View 1 (cartoon, helix red, strand yellow):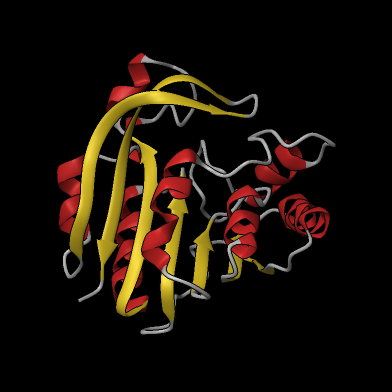
View 2 (tube, one colour; view 1 turned 180 degrees about the horizontal axis):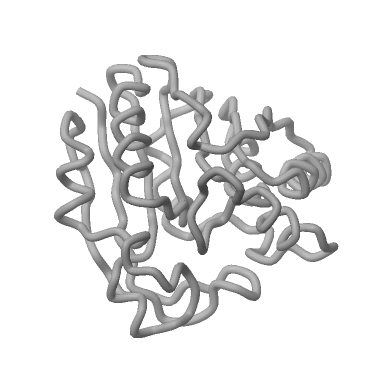
Length: 209
């Protein structure tokens, strides 16, 4: 579902059309921040990826030995997740679902990942509340997404500022987690054809105490 417009009911056809092509529009390599922070997940963790898109992050985590479930609304995204996993010699469990229709089970996950998964504010609050509840004690949440300052860069992401991550708001919505890393930074994001250039992002690593 990656992730330049809201994931909500009716979004699946948009993302199916975007992903229904041979190339991977966001590339096949994992997000840089996820690569850096993945050691926080430990080894052989059960990990849930929200709005996985075409599979690059889930496949990376599976290659590290984690047991990954990827949520994605678009049928073409699901197909590409499995194709990339097969090429890389790993298995990723998938569920074709809209985040508005999925509920994260309480205390089930050792890791949850959200990379450029931009949601309408009400749905985002609901999903982040489920993230807090859904982690096991000691579980880790890793998130990167664009902030409203990204609108000045125009190098990817939603054009609607309501879908972007305002740090103070996200801090409040993650109440119940200990923030190990929480920073708005400006950095190059080079991920396929649709995320290319200097970007303003919020980076989060949070621990369930």
